[in-house]
Image 1 (cartoon, one colour):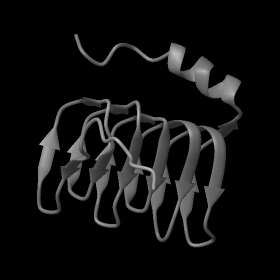
Image 2 (cartoon, one colour):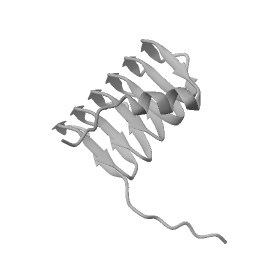
Image 3 (cartoon, helix red, strand yellow):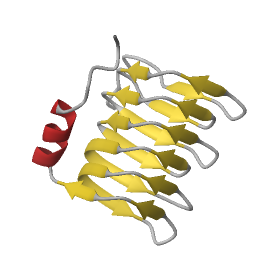
Length: 126
């Protein structure tokens, strides 16, 4: 039996919660409330069915089920699921889109594209 070591827990912005400002994390993030600001994680970012983000999202992986108004950058896999609504450009190593998802913007795929897009980002913390 193999044990997993957990270096940190996931961060949750729960339903009914509004947050204004940028979020930067090295652990998984789940947004079920509303965030007005940019989100940056070196792990996975999940926007739940009731989640809403007005800002850019950057992560190793991203799973979008709610609403996003902004660009999304996922180094590995970006999933647009369920009845999600995304308005903005996508930069992803790999992209999976369910038939019920709505996306309006440009899509750029491949690891080189994501790395180039990340270099163009201004620093979040100033």
